[in-house]
Image (tube, rainbow, N blue to C red; front, side):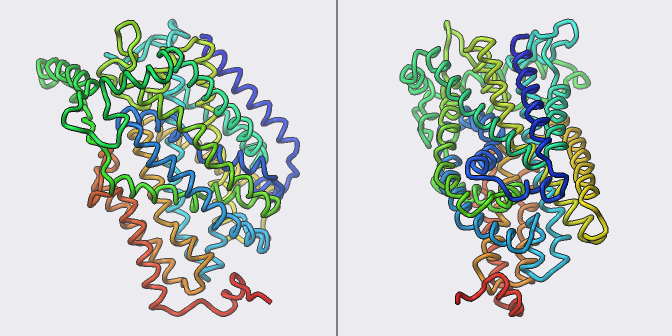
Length: 556
């Protein structure tokens, strides 16, 4: 009950902040979608960082570190720190300047002008929205799991427990469907009324919350395990592969063998039942295999996705000036380190942590998305556990809000206003249209989340792979005069076709460690889309002189 109360207090504070910032709303579409292009350095940093640090970074990184070891930090966090800042500097400032000069609100507006093609927007819109939806699912699913795992016993007379074994949900826990609905509703309210300014202030508040609480909780968990040195020594003794990139033949794999024993018991019980009463077959135990050099290096393409996220583009356009980007370029990698290091270490420690002779994460615990919450609920007090749960929810909601809003902006500006005529609608009507579409997207995402399609980390990787495969398009658009309309179509369609083919080949995301030619699928997709863009552009008519002069003016 304590954790539930803390969560409610936090969400109430967030709603109050949303109400306060909504009073700054000027009533125009430019203010609702872009905060009148008046966001300064600090709010821009908080918006960009809060938006990129999703459930994938907190819940997903802990779960993946638990499965594969601390190599996940090198693969994702290290590359992200370098690549994200490079994208902000090389792409973000350029796009901000175009947006300010030509009045763009969405990236599709930019691509239509740059490649002299109205229909390019029709091709891009469903692809971008289709890739954002899994991104939204990551947040909604993680929110539901987090609340369900952290509120056990709060309402034992209302909600029954379910499940068996280590992953069972105790009686009284807020069910997944209700917890995820509550988070969607809170985000919807402050996005609906506050627009991007409300989102920016909420992101600043939530980013500070999850950074501070994450560090505090990490310190408490470390102390409960006897300090960082003792916790790490337990891992080196029982599961040393977790602290390396590779798995050796003589590694004890204590966690794997313990999980395997539980699996064998489940299989024996499952096979002993009549076929019509068996239910789903127990999931096989994942055996650690290490991370090959090619696998590790190919992860560098994943962070390129930040250059094509529609919600990041929207935040770039809100900047007051080019100087507003300076703090984000410098501080973003440092903030990534502050968030990822504690999460990855907690995941690694969770493989071997033992309290009073019992593993903190029981053998047979099959949900990596719940590892962080389980560690917190077991090793901290209810009060601190509630605060960290609020911190996790802060990270989740700081991404959901921007994504919901950007979809509303894209639908309003790229579809409705573009094809019906921009002069046909007043600012109030455009804002209303955006709000209605946001409501529909929130409802649709919530419904899909109830199906629980895969792990947070796997969903995130495929989502980011799709956006990364389109990075050659935006990079060529701002730096290569010779990039043509046909080349843009070839890039987008090749990326979509390759992504879908490899996604299907992986069992539609079922293969959590799916590799293609020993590499992450994103490497192949980016290579194919880049080749298509270059070859087709060189083989087709160059852009008009007017377009080249518009986007690549000669220095006088």
